Image 1 (cartoon, one colour):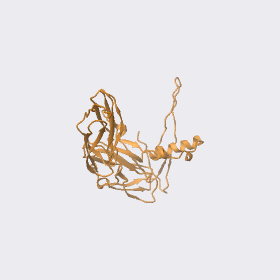
Image 2 (image 1 turned 135 degrees about the horizontal axis):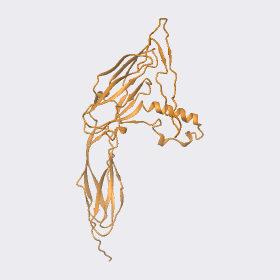
Image 3 (image 1 turned 45 degrees about the vertical axis):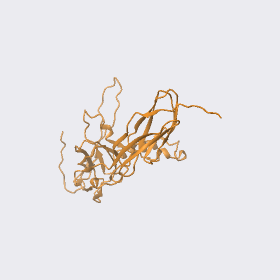
Image 4 (image 1 turned 180 degrees about the horizontal axis):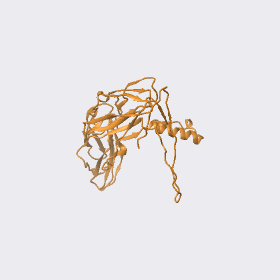
Length: 313
């Protein structure tokens, strides 16, 4: 008969539990970290057991060196609102299984638009008008919203002026890439020989979409956050009447964000072309004498009656 003696492996969790708190439904929650400490001088082998589809753990198996600790990354995702309670079990070879509770509350943020409707009324063709879009987030987590008004090229979102004390102003509105599934795109579908002219056209289209297909991050301040919705009519043929396509990211429409937008283009007494004078960026070489840049503005009167006009300076 052959017999042997093996020392028992002794490991402990350094945390009592993993509490994610409130998280945004249908979005990946911020990762949490748990640690296991090996109290023996010899290495130990572990294997994680967790059958919950909402949880992702890395690593699932491996070795912890003697007198050292190992960090585990735990991710959570739930497509539906729920209070989640479970536990992660880690089997230790030659030792007792370790268990740690996991608590998460996946919620739909309490967020709404203060204005009951957004009515621009009549706006003269060639002119523009802005209306406030006041969003209030009464939950204790940041709400992620997706606005897609690419089907309404007359409209765009305008951010308020940045606060000097706000270092995350650039994160409030982020353009959504034109190709959402670019990671899964087949390489054969990409034309590597596209000319510079095609690239410039795509850049122009992207610049326009960047103001109409965006991800909005509304922080949990409880204070009104005011965006501006700008309307510049492209014609006077038909009035605009639609539900603002603003949805909770990963969840869809909610009643608090459902607002109707109305606007109509009005025939002007005279036309100004272009409607916006854009000199773009001009480069002046060092030592070069600055010269004025000019751009023509054409004014025409389609009516039979004369129209008086003046320029305010």
